[in-house]
Length: 174
Image 1 (spheres, rainbow, N blue to C red):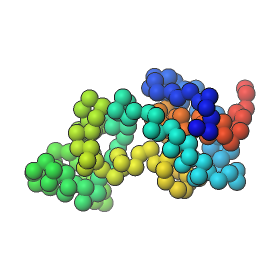
Image 2: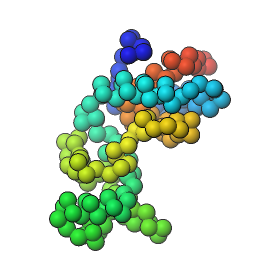
Image 3: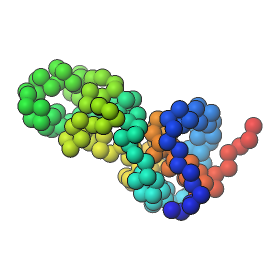
Image 4: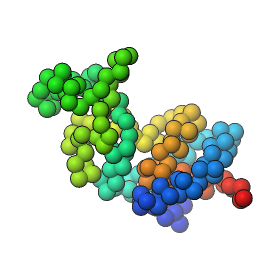
């Protein structure tokens, strides 16, 4: 690990409290990153690659209890097949459709969360598979969205705190 002294934090209450306490700091960090010439994608990928495997998402499940998940038409059809029911029944029971045709899970927490585990894990939706999106390129464009989940996801919290250290970000003291 780049920082052998990094202490991973997984306590959701602590992370939520830190998120509230560090709102101004995180806004300053976002501005710092937006105006820096640091190659963020490779650094975030590296930090995520080190941190994500050390955090047990099934001990958390907070994303499943708090995120609105988009579902593609193909994913809805796949879910219907997995559940041995019709697409209409899946839409009626589990999904909501916008006037523009977008589908989202119709309840938070997710219907498919049980004991912090996804009951349709093998067929989970792309939004679920991809979260917290730290493996993707284009981090500069997603900083705001990532920080929206800072108080919700231990992976994001720890990656962002490690990123602050590696970029030598110094928050203003008030």
